Length: 294
Image (cartoon, rainbow, N blue to C red; front, side):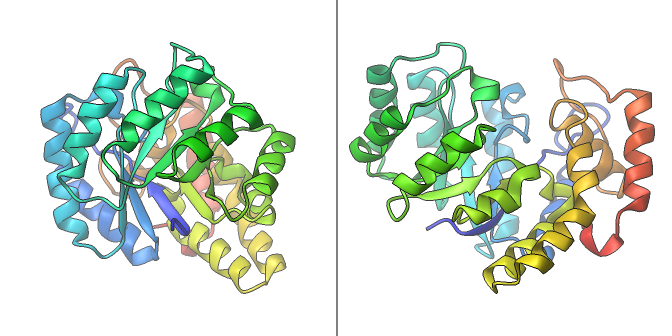
């Protein structure tokens, strides 16, 4: 159901901290022109946690109108409060997305029974769910048994965005649940490894900057030309890694600003990229093949 390259879209802000709708329009058009299969709105990269409800709705209205059904739309609605997640999901579904992205609740570290009920509540709306598993941010790592209970108990979960760096565990779950649910790569720097274990695609923050690269990698792999896919990946890899020199999306936004798409403004508690890392980003960006960039 969810195949290909999905960009976890950054939210451009003006220097005054307001949503920059002109830059948003430019960024969306560049993503679509690059051939991405979908856009994820209000995810981690969008800094949704630092936006109020009115801002979120305004952004969704503008982005959905701009996309105009040219690619799939997924909206992030997860929080660490089931009631708030339900409110977010209900609000998001007014925009008729193709699915909602729901992260496992962070900080609370829910037990298996609570986690199952959390996603069962999300499923009450009937919309396709992408379960977002990112232990590094949530502090919650799902065992194969808990994942099995979730996928069996909540058939509305149509895909898992997997951002665990434990590739042995990821491989175990990819093999066990093959044919049952789509696995989407959530680690940009491991895209070839995920494709090798039958991932159906990727939800990528680095694609804000490198959408053409990710699309080319995916298409080459789908055609069976794995060597070409890896060659393209190798060229993009230094900049992919550089996107995470500091907490996402700080470096992504700095790179977008260098490419003329909005400014580098992020919202507190995120701060500006250090001068030392800006210099590294500038150097790597300059060395990156231009055909791989938006």
